[in-house]
Length: 67
Image 1 (cartoon, one colour):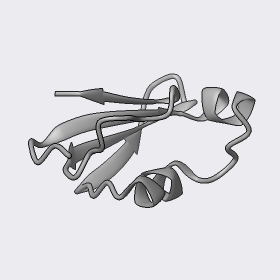
Image 2: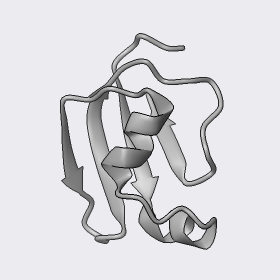
Image 3: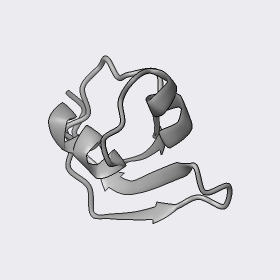
Image 4: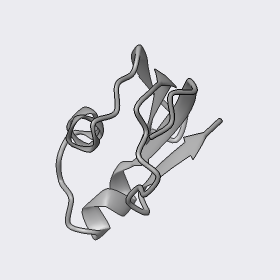
């Protein structure tokens, strides 16, 4: 697991297509990821989580980490 602070995006449409209808914060909680704050991206279907830690190496296709 990474301890470096990272930004993570959760694509809600892609999650729904994959059968995951949970709130994006619930998705991160289930993965064990902690974050400082969240904000919706301009397109509205993506939620961005800032200053994330405890990021597992394997993430679902609808969760993207940016270091």
